[in-house]
Length: 313
Image 1 (cartoon, one colour):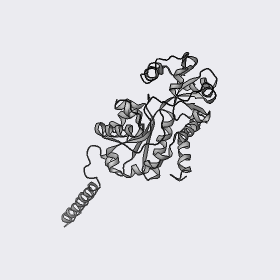
Image 2: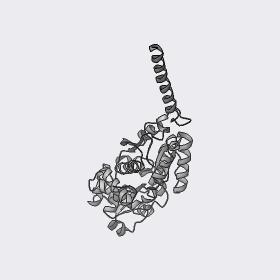
Image 3: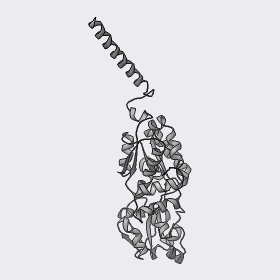
Image 4: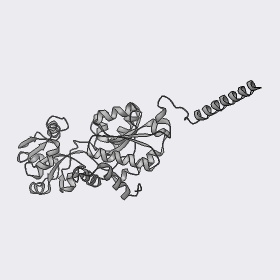
C-alpha cells in the first residue's frame, strides 16, 4: 500500500514538471533561433552610444523613453567610435544606438557623397537592411554635418556667408583645425578639390577641444565645426553654407537590430516621437548644457524629455 502511494506521488510530481515545462516552452515566440534574447518581448533592450557628448545625450534619451514605455534597459553609453559600436550591433552585443546618415553612407557603406537628405536616408536604410539586417528608424531634422565656423563680426566684415565666399578670400584667413583635417579627403583636400585650389594664410593644427577658444580669442578666423556643436548657439557663431555640396547631411536616427524590432514593434513608435523635436538649435542648446555648463548628459536628457511631455518625472 505504501509503495503504491509513493508511486502515485512521484507520478504526480513528474506530471506537474512536464506540464510546467510545456507551459514555459509555450511562452517562447515562434521562430526563435539562436538570438532568443532579442526575440523575447520581455527581454532587456541594450542601448549603446558612441564616445562624444551628443551621443551621450541621445543614448540617454533613447534609454529613458524605452524605460518610460515599460522596457528594461541596459546602458552601454560611451562604448566607442563608429567601428566599435557598429560591430557590437552586428555581433548582437547591443540592440540599438544613435547613428548619423552621413556616417552610415560614407564610413559604413562607403557609398559616394549625396546631398539630398531623403536620398541619403533611403540609401543607408536599404544598405543596412540588405548587408546587416539592421534598420533605421525616423531621422531627426538636425544635421550634425562637418562645417566651417566664423564669428558674426569677422564673417560680416568680409562678406562671407558661403564656402565659395570664403575660398575667394582664404589668403586673408587663419584656419584652426584638428590635425586629421589637413589630410582627410573630406577635409582640406576635399575643400580644395570642390571649391578650387585656394590656400589659407595659415592653418593651425590644434586639438579639437581648443577650436572654439582659438576662434573667440582671435587666434583664428575660421574653424572646423560640426552643425550641432553647443558652442555655436552659445557664442552666436556663423556656419558657412556648403554651397557646392562637399559634405552629406548627418541626420541622426536610432539604428536597431531587425530581430529586436520584429519582436518589439512598439519600440519604433516610442523612439520616433523624439525625432521631429531634435532641430539644430535644440541640439546645440542641449550639447552646451553638457559641454559648456558641465551638466550630466542623463540629467539634460531627462529634463528635455519631461519638458516635452514625453516622460514623467
